[in-house]
Amino acid sequence: MGEIARVLSSARISFPDSGLGLFITSALLSQIVSNVPATVLLLGGRDWISLAVGVNIGGTGLIIGSLANLIAVRIGGDVGGIREFHRYSLPFLMITAALSALILAL
Image (cartoon, rainbow, N blue to C red):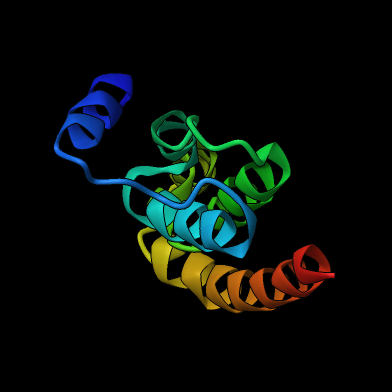
């Protein structure tokens, strides 16, 4: 991800480096590539609190948001576990993201 960040930077593609923009970007990017790679990709930001909160919140949404999610569902061994996981994780993501954005905005 560090290499991808350098390529994006050389192509003049940038991400927000602070505030709510960084929070939202890190939470959304965590839904696509997991929270650890998203953190590495966004390390250039100067606002570590928004980054940390965003990637942590992002790890709670889709099952791929965090490797820990995949491990937990895999241990359960239930094929319907993914659907059941999202039944709880997506509302949790929405609620915690909204509350966290409000707190960061204050």
